[in-house]
Amino acid sequence: MIPSASTTSIRRSGGRPLPSMGTLFPILIVIAFVFYTLGFIQSIRNLPDINGSDMFFTAAGHDALRRAVLPLYQKVQQRKVKKTPTTTTTIPRDNNNNNNKREFIKDEDIDSKSRIKSQLKRMKEPAAVKVPEAKWPVTIRDEPANFETIIHPGDGKTEMSVPKFWSDPLMTPTGPLMSRETALQVGSTTDGDRENVNSRTIFIAIASYRDYQCKETLDSIFTRAKYPNRVRVAIVDQIEDGVDTPCNTPFQPCTENPNQTACKYKGQIDDYEMEAELAIGPVFARHIGHRMYRGEYYTMQVDAHVTFAQDWDTDIVMQLEATQNDMAVLSTYLSDISGALDPATGYSRMKTRPIMCNTDYETDAQGAHLRHKSQPERVPTIQEMPQMQPYWAAGFSFSRGHFVVNVPYDLYQPMIFQGEESSIGIRAFTYGYDHYAPQRSICFHTYASGHEERNKVPHFWQHAAKYAGTGKKAMVRLLGLIGMLPEVDPETWDHREEERYGAGSVRSLEKFFTTFGIDVHRKRCQRHLCSFVQAGKMHRDFQKYLRPDGMGIDYNNIDYTFTDPSPDSVEDMLE
Image 1 (cartoon, rainbow, N blue to C red):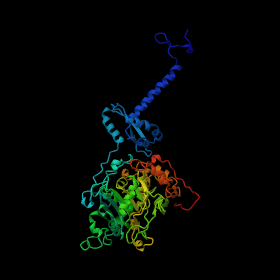
Image 2 (cartoon, helix red, strand yellow):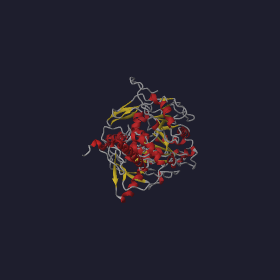
Image 3 (cartoon, rainbow, N blue to C red):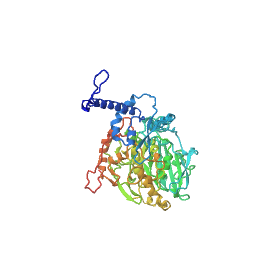
Image 4 (cartoon, rainbow, N blue to C red):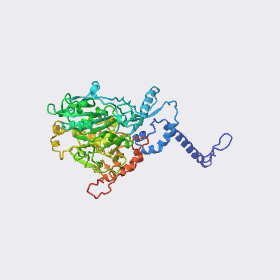
């Protein structure tokens, strides 16, 4: 008789019965889990070295995986030893789609191992940019071979010879924060002593469009600097030949008065002359200005109609160093010159300064974009150092020199005026830079209101008809690069040299928008942000997260979303 299934037993040799399936199943589950765990750990060991950062997981879109795996991964990497490569290698490859997803490929060809190893090495560690030697004194006039030809971005056909960049960016769009060691390699001095703050050089970029006050600005820079021999000025001089005088032309012949600024400091002034008809806005002019940087320790950007206070150089350097933040950028809309300076001493009389916090969307012919409005000018709430703010202003900016290396003005944004500040400011945020309002104003602006002569100065848009349509396309690119056009297909806008002019990944674009109350989908900002900024709360809450090595605020420790404290109020709250 054949026994029924319910009574069947299978015996091992020796006559002892084997365990039933009911008994064996849990054991098999445990064994499978052990092998799965060992395999998972082995896969972690074989992941590319990401230098202890979460870049790999973030780029793959696996935030939960990052939180779960990264601590284990970092421990494994500390004990990592060389192993013989297996015949099958799995590597992530960017498929260049819009979601930043990754696909995985297998390569069982032994002859391809060297190629795979090279790919993994590139993923592990982005190619380091060698920081060029910074020399002083320096002028682009001594570099005739260091120019290159570009095509004018407005008309698409005119060839222009422009200075080459001093250096490629020191950070990559998908790479980690620049190391302090790299940052410290940037910066020339007048005497070779980097510890002597008074010998650290200052580069000043000025974009001038047919501006009669440019000479006066140049004069006040040098005559009111305490250490003028450390200052170098680069002017992008957009003038009409035969009508306008170049900014570096002395008021009198140098033979008659050799002590004039344009004579005495001729070797420290570079004037790049450009036909006014080729002017297509401040972005392009300032792009050329950034190309004229040559490794100075500090860099400044101002307009061509600015008057400086006495000893401005020592004051602004002291302010920047007070932040103890190598990624700090001091920036603001300048106060008006009227009554700002003591006529006898040249020192500032002002006890207040503006702070950048009042911004909202506006819509014009180029679309919806952020625009800075009138900013509050108050006695600083924070007294011991410059005060943190979310936004950057083009009219005055002072920082370490590597700022213009890592966040250069975009070559491909013709006819842009509104929008340049959000472009530079937000890109800078994603590369790890932090914006601060100065403690004290060290220079002052001549505004057209109340100054009749300034109303007569021409503007670049007098040639707008020649470049019709380029501004709208440029605005789409500008907004696309900083993540402010989620409704537009990225394939429809210009991506040229995005690795140089796009956003970084030290901080995400979303982090900026979330933190400061910007809705890029509905094109709205949470109002009354100044109540958070001007009052000093932003500074007190964020400055404490400055990294121990001074390389910027660590926003990984900041979980904050600004919401309007007075949504029913229609008035701007600037306090």
